[in-house]
Image (cartoon, rainbow, N blue to C red; front, side, top):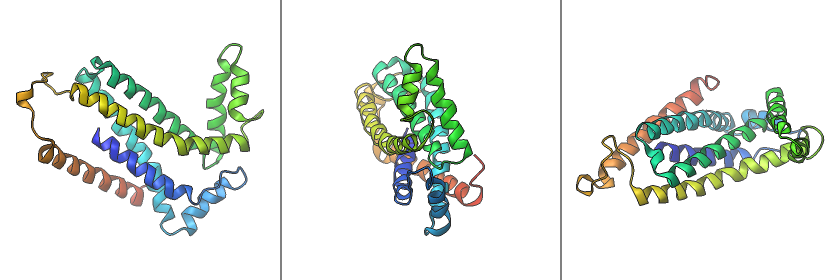
Length: 217
């Protein structure tokens, strides 16, 4: 869970730095990304960190879900349901972010995924055209996807606080499934040291990947 928090913070920071150099226009988007990588100081590193950070985010979240299922965390309905909403929001954010560089994969990815909504009876086609802002994936689509990609992480951050609030109400799950007060230990130094070690390991992995093999994941 704490690793997911650091993932979110890393993504927001690198994302804000990238947004300073990005242009949400179909004719300039790809060029602006290339410019960031080639001409901006350490722009290539920021972009690699952001792209691989997204992969790390999903790796961590799948471990988090697996742990939740294994320990029966889904019994705490409020915490679990907000977790599901967080997962969906994260998937939406990753998808709209994938479209932003405006390469061939971005364009056709956007076309295929948005077209899925046309399968909805009666309102499908209208919904798709409303999402596109026209009759095909074009400039209005890109600008609104950029706006969404900027906005959603902050919504995710807010929902994370709600997620944690509900978690503090019930307490975190453990392998024994026994929430007894007498067994509890202070967060600092017992958990904080574990968290710091986890943060360090993950950031070393992320930076190594961004520097030496940015296109692996």
